[in-house]
Amino acid sequence: MLGNAAGPSSTNLTLNTTSNSTFSGAISEAYFGAGSLTKSGSGTLLLTTTQGVYNGGTIINAGNLAVTKSACLSPAGVTINSGALEVAAGYADTTPITFNGPNAALQIDANQTYTYNGTIAAA
Image (cartoon, rainbow, N blue to C red; front, side):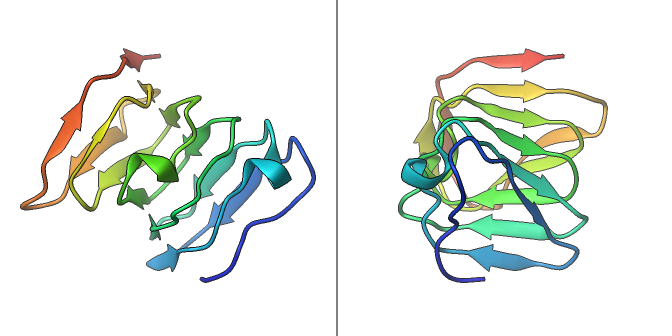
């Protein structure tokens, strides 16, 4: 999946992946403003975007949302209802993380270093 994610301001962008896929386009505040990004479906979605600025938060409802840098996530935080936030490449992060259920996880891939200095909550 290549290209840019665009939509009206304050839109929720839902990416439903049932197989493994990659998104390397821009997720821009200019298009989404206060909108959020929701990952659904059992597959893994790898975000490698170099421009991931949106303000409405990141929600994981199923599968894995794999990221390669903190710029892939909203500074408003990540809520994991089910599935995992997967650290696919080593980086440092301060994005708030909320685990909202017994099937919510943080997965750090083999041979990666993840330095975290943010807030972790359980809902």
